[in-house]
Image (cartoon, rainbow, N blue to C red; front, side):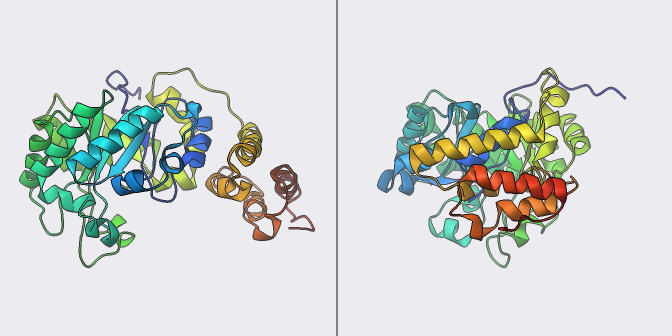
Length: 336
């Protein structure tokens, strides 16, 4: 059966912001696999940008575009300041986190708890839109705690859209602010994609992207029949090779010829550049590509080499040679 979708938009496919995972190095790796998929930073708090090292949080590689900066915060002036920094550093979008349920985020009075204060979110969106020319978007849940009525998320989107937000990324699961860990909240309560679909029907002028539990290209295709985009997270972090199919299947691009060996070689070159330019150790980068050879014969031993702490003193090119040896001989080299 031939798949038919609307014309590809900027938010057709994206990789979710994931704390401690989607840093600059992870995004560089993902960009080697897909040219058109939208990438997101891990959440950066407004306080970190005002009081910390902006370069450490905002540095990006030119190959990452299109790339969005996700902010965590609730005070409009702070959000505007952070958004201006993000635009100055070259980000293509500023995204506000209204979905994270962690206690640390709640203590900062932002994340998912902001869904209970839609006017405050609207004020933050307006302040950011007044400060920058790039799109300002919101990522949110369908509800918080036991609030499961569709009217809750409908009214949230309606209020925030009045401030000029045109793109909503809907994690189709309630955020539980008490009683569940963030890890548990990735599985409980159940996903309700139909609420995201209803948002698209009720707000056809908005861009609605669905997020949460999406694992396969077939599931992506099913969502794209209902909404404007799909965002994937942990599945593509652990099994990233699927992204090599996305540009042609979902973005209307020509099929790309890309080989795992070439991607690994490019990552080794990148490790060497980052060591020279920023003093970044190779293992801080290699951790993001451990899923590259998922499903290949010898992949487990290959991962063992790249994740072996005893090899940290070695240069990345030497570790690469050892990883290739493990992959092809299915035996760990002596030093590993």
